[in-house]
Image (tube, rainbow, N blue to C red):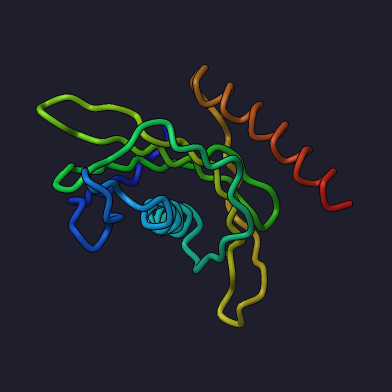
Length: 148
């Protein structure tokens, strides 16, 4: 069973734009996604990591000042030195949770000389993990096609 990394933030004034009802900046959410994903990747690999790519970052619903943002991250796929991490972001408001973002990030594990290093193989066990793994292979093929 996969391990999840969870982070929690309170949306403060400095995280928001200045319109009538202050909303969380997309860039701030992106930063939190990157950090939460990196923590999950570091825990999984036991190494420092660097972000290689972020796939299709869509903002589904807004978060407003004083909202609680919860993020859950977990590994969906591994290659030789890279791994994909899914980060789900939710807003908690009035006892309810609403999805605001789903992101898939690719990290590369680094050794003590900041060179790519092998990562432990991820073997999906549950049906959900197998589905995520299959979808990760499709995303990987699309990324490779773009850069070839």
